[in-house]
Length: 117
Ligand SMILES: [Zn+2]
Image 1: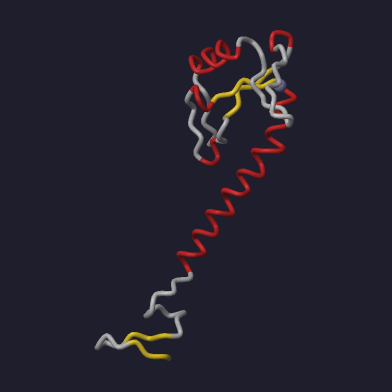
Image 2: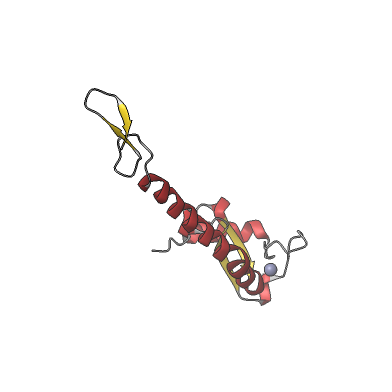
């Protein structure tokens, strides 16, 4: 489930933005599009899918262009990467190299001696 920003957070974020888009362009500069005459979105700086919260710090006011851009260029690769890392982590946990595990070439005898299978 997506976590959304509260009314207060949105209002505070909009005040902080001073009505100008907080998106960062590929040049590294702030977009600053005037939001008074545009549609805008409240965006999770850290996507909620990977644990971003709904605090003011994690809330960016973005014009439609920046929001669209960020979702395509940043959020999707970031989320994909986070999912990959999670899978990798699971993989590591699954492939245990512990001496007496079934997948291991070694077997631990009851007396504690480790031998090749
Ligand atoms: Zn923008």
